[in-house]
Image (cartoon, rainbow, N blue to C red; front, side, top):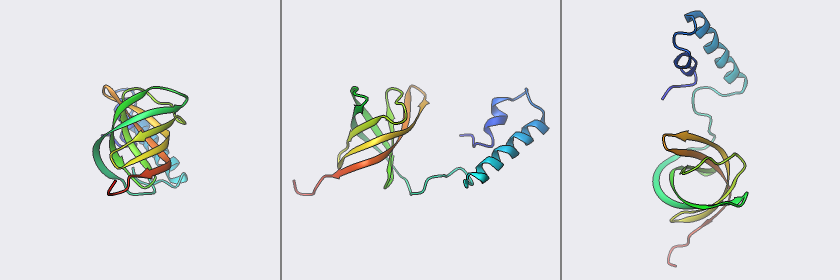
Length: 131
């Protein structure tokens, strides 16, 4: 996967001079530095990779239910695969094996035939042992 500093070059191969590419990389680095972001990791909490099935219901705006997969989890949210594009701000109910979460879509990008969405928890209800 290309880093943010490699993206300009791969996008415009053959269209920009090496000096122009260097200038673009420099400008991107300056923008990230001003935003207080260094490197490619901008998350505040650790993520833990997983690959478990779940079910999603679109609550706002009202929409369909769908089978999804949870790709990673952190204290603040999830990365999930979804069958269609979800606009930022969409509110979801996500049924997982160990919890039911209400979450807001922060981003959604295409990955092959599916979409990857990052969602931030609004509320989580954890399953209790022994039920």
